[in-house]
Length: 190
Image (cartoon, rainbow, N blue to C red; front, side):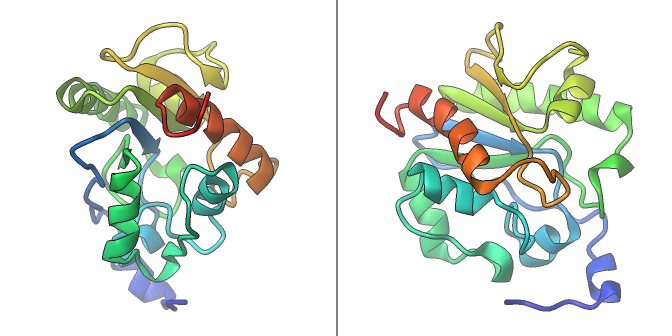
């Protein structure tokens, strides 16, 4: 596993991690914004305690284990794309914690996400983080799960954030939550 000093990680503040998007995009996962480890490795959800990839594997959304903390391999990225899975963020700039983002940044990121979804046309979008979703889209009463309104033509789920800071979520509970949008996108059997 990669190792970074605090100073090395801090040097990635405000860095951008490119979207992972393939031609056959069926399910677009949306993080809040990259953390510094993610920026350092140029791999979404890369922090060693993040449970995103273990949850995808447990749910059967990916069929091989992916350990991104050193940075994803080209084969890992190809596997996700071949499964119809993409990854982006509401806000592109890296921070230590998502609570460093302003309401204005989240709202602007929401507009950019709507444009991306309208352009790329995934069947399903899964935003990981209810608080960020509520703020970005001014949906103060939204709950985790399938949202009632289409999202630029896609079905929209809000799913729990896999960050280690979300202490009440487990790999098992995340796998269950992520399986729902994956079934709707045709990645898992209905």
